[in-house]
Amino acid sequence: SHELRTPLTVIKGYTETLLDEQNWQDPKMAERILTIIDKEAERLSRLLKDLLDLSQIESSKGVMKKQKVDLKNVVEEAVSLLRGHSEAKNLEVNLIIHGHELRNIWGDPDWLLQMFIDILENAIKYTPQGGRIEIKLQEKGKELLAAVKDTGIGIPARNIPYIFERFYRVDKGRSRRLGGTGLGLAIVKHILEAHGGHVTVESSVGVGTTFSVYLPLAPVAV
Image 1 (cartoon, rainbow, N blue to C red):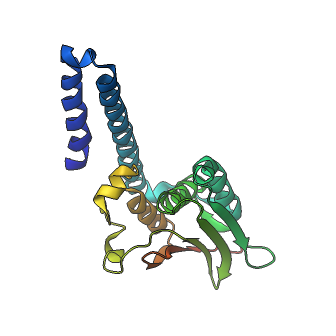
Image 2: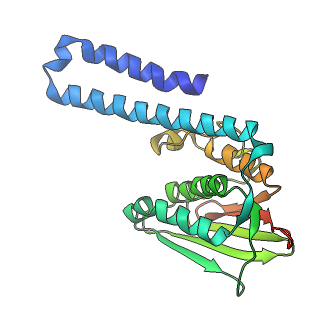
């Protein structure tokens, strides 16, 4: 409730300020207030979307529309959807496939797409201008590994055990400035659990972070 109240309180406070007739006589002040209101409204919208996604995943784990999925296509679509964000920061994004032909996994393509969007959004958000993001796909025994490696700011080792918790932020101030809701990685965790998968995280502060996502391969008979 605190996460919802904060943007609402800001919006309400600045709306009241804007209603003060004196502030309308200063166009620059009015513009600054409207910009803040717009930013907080957008943050509230993202937060509500993430909360709805999380609720939907938790309530539909057993009824996901699972089918054979080519994970390469899912990752390529996620990269394409976020291309505007990565190009705005002049980031190099590469997809590397290990092996001649990857086998399919068994999952819900829509939720898997959401998961990779959340992981890649995080990488883009915390990688400085001109950095690099690399996505490697390869089979590992009975699983398919998707490793997303960035040259971002990194995560301190003491914080890694908590990053998949709801509303957990390594740097609250930075996260808010960058538009984070604190729910993206919680959504990733729940989608993975619903697919029988798991994730590991390796990170070095000032060097970058690698999220290694493991998903079960589809049974041969499926």
